[in-house]
Amino acid sequence: MGGTGRSRAAWAVFVIAAAASAAALSACGSVDTIRSKVSSDPELEARRAAPEDPLAKAMQVGWTSARASHCGFIFDPARLRADYLASEARAGKTSDEMAKLERAYDYTRESVAATIKNDLTYCNKTRTTAIRRDLNRYLAGDYTASARMGQ
Image 1: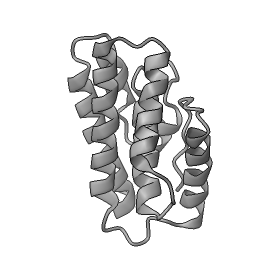
Image 2 (image 1 turned 135 degrees about the vertical axis):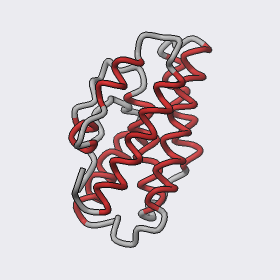
Image 3 (image 1 turned 120 degrees about the horizontal axis):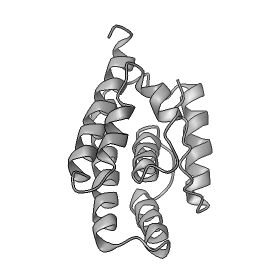
Image 4 (image 1 turned 45 degrees about the horizontal axis):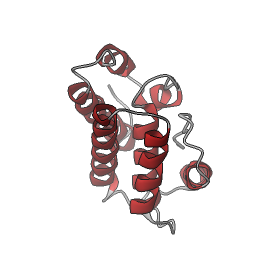
């Protein structure tokens, strides 16, 4: 796999999140979609997350929440989670779908936070710019699956 420790950590987080998401979705047809995302470049795959993937938004909003918290952005992570999930409920998600989205969001947020918690160089200018852009969009209620992970 090669690369820096940071890219290996990002890869590990992506693989763990994808595996957890696959397990959560084992009863629906999205497992193959998630499995197809695992490649040698998780940042590239995150940028290419298909908007129609049922877990794309949950994973990207959870990822951004963890990253923003780590980098000291001032926002209420619990409120962001509640607002995101409320938007999915308003969109007509079933209770089973909501449970899967909650698990995907929570697992992604927790695993990312655990992975980056000791990385003192994580919050570089490029990354914080990307986090700020996505966080502001999410706080405004736009949860479109298109988060971009800064380098």
